[in-house]
Structure formats: C-alpha cells, structure tokens
Amino acid sequence: MLEYILPANIPTYSTFDSSYRIEKSIENYTSNDVNYLYYIDKNEEWPSEFNNMMKSIKDLEITIDNQIAAEINTYGYNIENIEESSFKDFDKEFKVYTVELKEEIEDYTSLLKTEKAIKEKLNLFSKGIMLELV
Amino acid sequence: MSFKNGYYKKLCDNYLELLKPINKDKRFCDEELLKRDFVSRSYYTALLHCRDKIPESLLENQDGGTHQKIINSIKNDYIEEDLRSLKRLRVQADYNTNTFPTPLKVKSATYHLNRIDAIIKDILSKTKDDLIPE
Image 1: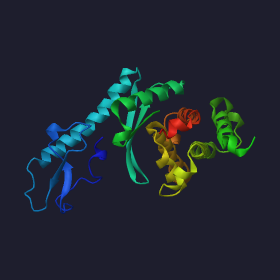
Image 2: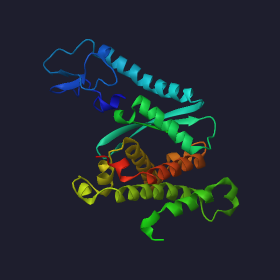
Image 3: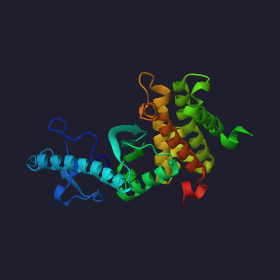
Image 4: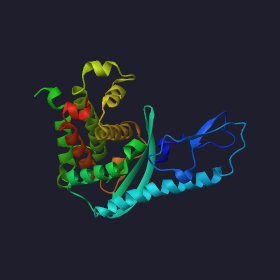
C-alpha cells in the first residue's frame, strides 16, 4: 500500500536533500489519502515525530498483509505461507504477495474470481500491490 | 488455422496437458523446459491478443517498446495486472537461469500453470471495450 505514496527509498538524514515529501500526519492517514503531502525543507528542523511516523508506516505495512490474510480467510481458504516480493515493470514498481494456500484448488476460475474480489475490495492494484493465490 | 487465430494458445494447451501428473511417463523432454516455455508463450499469447484489440493509432501515441505500448494502452486494471504478472513470470522463466522461477518452485507448479492458463482464457474472453473503455 505505501509504496504507492512514498518514495521507493524512505529518506534518511544522509539522503535528505532539498524539500522531500513524506506523508502528512500519519494519524490522519487513510489508504485513500494519497494527496496530502507534507513538505520538509532541508533548512527546517527535522520533525521529532518522524520516527513515530516511520513506525506507524511499518505498522500499516503489516496491516495490509493482515488485511489480505483476513480477506482470504473469509472465502474459506487456509493460508500455508505468504511470500512478499517486489519488481519493477517499466516505470512502475509493484509489491507482490504470493499467498500459498494449504489446499490445492482445482477450480481455477473460482480462485481467480476470489483473487479479483479481494483486489477490488482492498483496491490493491492502484496501490501498486499484486496478489497471487497459489 | 492461421497463427493469428490463437498465437501460442494451442501450444500452451498442449504443454499443460503434457505437464499433468497423469502424463508423467510420456514426457518427451525435460519438465523444466516445458514449464519455462509454457510461462513464456502464455505471456506472448495474452499480449498479442491484447494488441489485436487496441487501435494502431492508440499504440502509436504511446512511449516505449511494443510491450510497454500495449500494457500502457490497457485501461482495465485487472487485465493490466494480469499482463504485468504474466510478463514478470515470463522474464523469470526466460532469463532467470540460476534458480527456478516462481511458477516452478511453488508447492504445486501445475497448480500455478493452470492459474496462468485461466488468466489467458480470461484475457481472451475480453472485448475491445473491456480493455480500453471510452
């Protein structure tokens, strides 16, 4: 979810240069809240809440993982393992959640429908996240 | 039947049939070769069918190479994601010579290959309006 709104490399003091946008007030953050940006100028004092924001971002990253798992469970599938990877396709970066199911599903049409329903509900593709149930 | 009618679809169907456990003793060559080629030809089958449904004038206005032009022309999130997913797997299958690409290392490769086959069928069933709605 967050790769869509944050730069690929979260800025550190050493890479911080000029103004750099990071997400405004994580407390007010929602997944659809992609347009609220907070600009920090290099001459400004580094915001003390930055570390908390980064921690919250990490928590949110875990949340999307849990959201996917919860959605899959509602469809009655049991999860064996979730593998996370990323790749770049032309100018876009994607994170891929490959969810290995415990049972072998022979009805692939049904499986794909489930996959699409979850993607739609969590709006994954627009956030640069792909989901594969295998 | 001309090549344009199905591209590599029939070849993919044959590969899938050969890869079924029931045909284990009848394989004519190395299973990894079949799987890699299945993944690769699957992507091209889907890509070429999508290209056929996109007006040339639209493709001409896109930047990049043929693959990028086709994928960027598609305005359907699901199909775009399916194509990008197949493309990612195709790159692994064709270029990742040191390790098994994802479709070959999951618990059941046949399971994953059937999923890819279902994605192709889904793409082939789409009309021009499904891919590039006005």
